[in-house]
Each structure stands twice: as structure tokens, then as C-alpha cells.
Image 1 (tube, protein in one colour):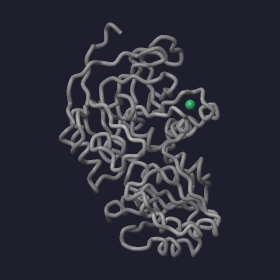
Image 2: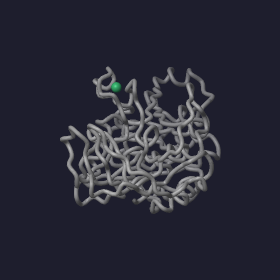
Image 3: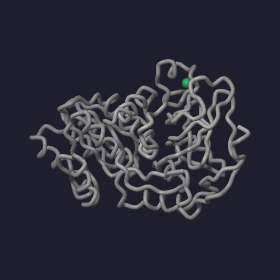
Image 4: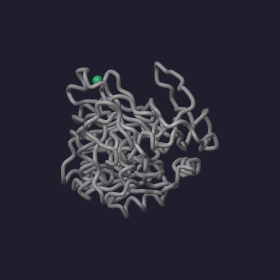
Length: 353
Ligand SMILES: [Zn+2]
């Protein structure tokens, strides 16, 4: 590691606030410990986690602990292995890799079952550890997956969090199959655009909801059969019209406040999958509308290693790619946050390093 610089440039958060609190500055480069790899970050992207790391989360979940500043966020990471710590055998310096961002113990019952995101000691790279908004980052070597030569880092770096979550919700939790129908709420967001891509790739019919005409048009250009403004009224009536009165097999809802309408949009036996509550976490709905029609509600904050590798391998075969809204250099991180927070972005805001 002697030929590597001892410092690096990073996008650092010193306190909660608006995009102006982001500081692009030189900090010490991390060193990989046993079992870890030092990554030369080439691309990362913004997720809700990055915006909350900077602004403070909208809801402090019990039990709450304040973060230790300074923070370097960034849970998505694609780059090259720069060095490896003691005992690492699965990757070598120079390897092009993408990181599975879930950090887990590997020995609890949940991990042994293959459910790393249910680990008793679960935490997230870039949320609970320094992340990829920097030239270098350290992560467990076993979390690295090699990526093919031809695939640009910016494409891969836009995928891990959003696509693993969307895959988990649609394919593993809701068991989506070709010929079924899906309603994606908040289609312009990271997970929404990933869900649109995955559902289309699976051969499902996709209906989408977004609050602006521009986003609805983009969703249709990317394959949505029809779109609706979910803020304009009860969208379940619209979905019933679209589906001959049956409803959809799956609703992807990261908004939360929309649950009553989401549940009413489901066919009998349909599945509401949930990965967030960005518009409100106290929905008002009738439990009878769930069990009387054999409907299910399933949650997923991220996916396990199998979900991650399943969706990444489709990208490695050229069958799946992220919808990229815009690309910023790390030095311009504040403007990237502004773009991601604007109502206009559609898809991933990528950061190249
Ligand atoms: Zn575990």
C-alpha cells in the first residue's frame, strides 16, 4: 500500500442541514483490516439514505442514537480493488467490483438462513460505516462481486441499493411472474425506476403513479402501460378501470400514506410490498380489506445476497440497466443532492469519483 496516497478527497457531512453543509475536503485514507478490501471508488449514487444522512431522518426510529459526525455517506459503490487486508483470497488488487452494501455477522441464525438483511447485527455500508462518497473506501472483501470489463462503473454504481431492494420486493417477496400486473407508486424515485425496469424485464404489465406530468411521460417512455397522478384522487378506481375491475397483482409503495388506495388497487391474493414511508408512516386503512380478499403486505428494507447477485447478474448479461437521471462529479456533491431532492429528477443521480 506504500504507493497509495495517505490522504483522499471526500464529500463530508459535519452537521445536519441543507446541501450547503456538504464539504469537499481532503481526509485520511482508510486502511483495510483483516478480511477487508480497500476500494478505489469509481462510481456511487444517491439514495434516500444519503439525503437523510445530511438532513437528519424525518422520523427517529426507537431506540434512536445520534450519528457521530463527520459522516461520509454512500451505500452504492463500484470501483477497483486497490489493496487487500490479511486473509483476503476472493479478490485481488486491480479487480473491477461492485459492493453488496449490507454488513452482517455471518453466524446468527438469520445469516445462516441466507437472510443477511435480517441479521441480529445488521448494519449498512455508508450509513453505519464511512461510505463511497470518497476516493477510497474499506469494506468486507466477501461483499464484493466482480463486474465484467465492458460494463461502465457509472451504470453498476447506480444499482446496488435500489435494484436489490426492488428485486427483493417484486421477485422474492411478491413472487412476480410474467403476465402479472404491477402498480409502482413514486415511479420517479430510485426504487420506483428500478421496480419499473425489473417488472418490465420480467414480462409484467406496469402501471405507474407520479405527481408530475413530466415523470408520468418518462415512465410511459420507459415502458409503463398507463400512468396516473396519485395525488389527484382515489387512484384505486383508476386501477380497477385499467384492469377490467380485477386490480393489480402487486403494488410497490414506498410512500406509506397511500396504503388505503394501494390495498384497494390489489387483486384478490395480491401483494402490497413496502420499502419506505416517505409521505407518511401512519396510514389509515380497513384491515378487513386485507384479509377478506386474501391480500398480503410484505416489507423489505433491502435484499439478501441472493437478491443482490440475481439482479446484478442480469446487468452483467446486459439485460437490465438503471435509468440514470444525471451524473455529477464528487466535487459537485451539493448540486447532486439538490438534483435528487428536486421534484424533477427521474431515476438515479450518479456520482463519479
Ligand atoms: Zn447475522
